[in-house]
Image 1 (cartoon, rainbow, N blue to C red):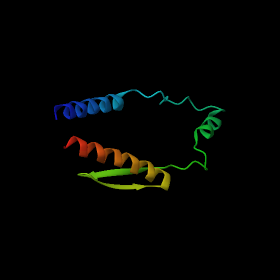
Image 2: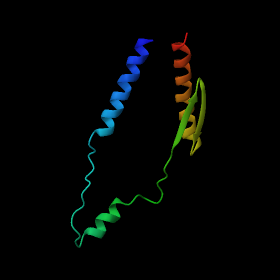
Image 3: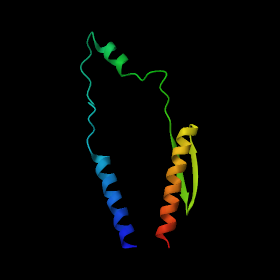
Image 4: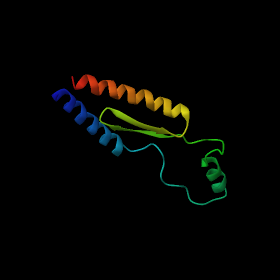
Length: 92
């Protein structure tokens, strides 16, 4: 049981580290000039790009899964299955 506790604490610390890790994106923009509009147009997302997402809620060993498309939902089902198996093996 102490191994699971140590793994959980390590994951929390890694998550906090990644949260405060500086991103490589530049946050400041150059002053307005003749090329400003061209730069803004380059940064806009393409209209054909589709955002996908989903989530898994585990209530004990039972997963609740939803996703924006079937491929994402299937991926989350595989992750939930892995979590369920890990949970069952850890509680034996």
